[in-house]
Image 1 (cartoon, chains in turn brown, cyan):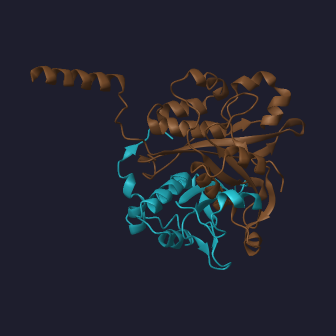
Image 2 (cartoon, chains in turn green, orange):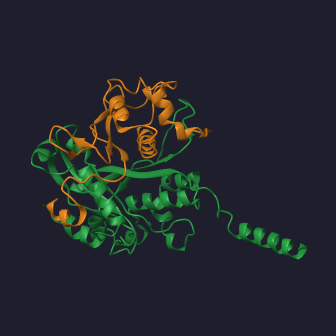
Image 3 (tube, chains in turn orange, blue):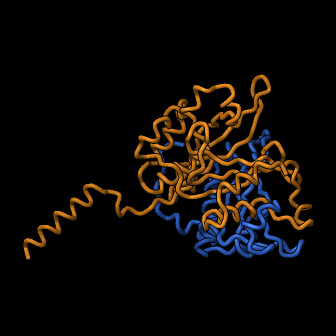
Length: 233
Length: 135
């Protein structure tokens, strides 16, 4: 009997010694990237993206209320522009939308802390820091699909807006860099939500939620979505 | 959008199964008093537009106030608010009617009093206080 108890103890400590996070509760945390195109030098367009973190239970020390932590605005050249002009930067480029999905999953699994994540996205050379993500135990390509329509800031508040669909998920890679990327749609320009409803069209936000649902249940593939959203209509 | 219909929609009036609440900036312009405009967009089951007969709908835009007014005790971070609303809707501690009614008020962020029933329900799952260092 004593012998059995001894081996139970050995197994217990061996298990928790090797897998300290085996039974840690998943962290409820949300990581999102949001941004808009802006014009850079020589008529080049960049995207200014901010990555925000919201962790359950983290309060603002001043207001005592729930708060978020943000990265500075990250300047991101569009993938095509990057390919055309900066081939050396290709190997170190990780799409910030894909990065936000990867960070969220790493934070939820407990392999990365909020402090480490903020250190990463707040550093000037965050692109270089993600260079060796394949060898890193912390960051892994996203396992879950996320789809979100975003209205572009320049299109203003209210009536007509430009919308862009952003999708991240397993297997969505940049063909050039072979790194996790986002499927980004051709913008739907000047989309008027109210008149579209009159014509029987669905809200872009609802559509994004339905696309995410369909991708997760595998009734549509990322390849099918990619074909559709690359058309201007 | 019609291309999606054969894959995505089970029926033309289909709603998403789960609630989602996200925040996005809706205006690049920051006014002199530090006001930025953004919107919390909520989608989910049974959210229908009564004006256009049962179309799935999102909740309309809401104005937010950024710093320096952010230091006020009444300020709540919009990203955090969106996350809390989504959780409260999924866990059914708040109904969508309650959320819409509250966010439709003028100056709603000033009315988000710590002692209010809405705030208590909103923060029900946020009771594990863990004050973060610095901002």
